[in-house]
Amino acid sequence: MILVRWFCFALALIFTAWLVPGVEIANFMTALLACVVIALINTFVKPVIEIISLPVNILTIGLFSLVINAFMFMLAGWLTPGIEINGFLSALMGSIVLSILSLGISKI
Image 1 (spheres, rainbow, N blue to C red):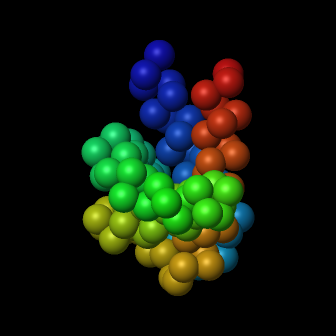
Image 2: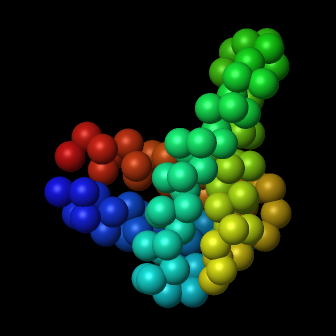
């Protein structure tokens, strides 16, 4: 079951790269590796960043979480060879699209 989810998330990542200008993925194997990197970032780095930025997140009524997601997406692109994310706006749009697709995959 976990392999099916991993495959679906990789397809969602490729669809995100196809849909959002400025996000480029070399091939499917790169997307699979990026899924692992994103999972590790979401597990270890993101909770620490969310705790540190909690006051700002409270002041913005949770909208700063979008900025955190964009930076985590940029970090994943920086750590994964074969992925290029050109700028913050591309990362923001890509993280929003990927979050929506991930929500749909998780519900199935």
